[in-house]
Image: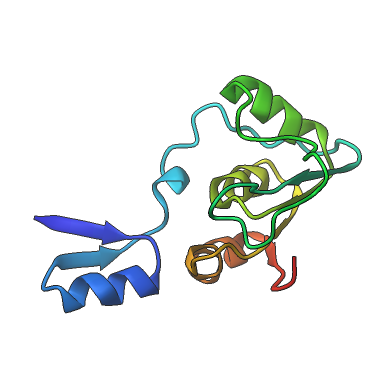
Length: 130
């Protein structure tokens, strides 16, 4: 069986396990159904984790969260000019829409690793501090 990894850390781990593995982008890069470039918008949208994967629990209520229906969530991202998030797929969607996106770390290295392999080539920024 052939396995695809979305970043170098997973690629190295799986190769060490003896897997037949290749490096590719996150699968979201291959299926952009419903995600259109939405130039413009106004304001700053913050979408941060408040669960076990959060680096720091946020005391304020987030402007948006992932519990919205998907189409509403896409419209919410489309309406902003700037997006700050520690959700990897939210950053990918915002980047595809042409938003000014800053991705922040989570408890694992996946955000930074996928940013290094993929998102950095599309204009997304990465900030170590949250």
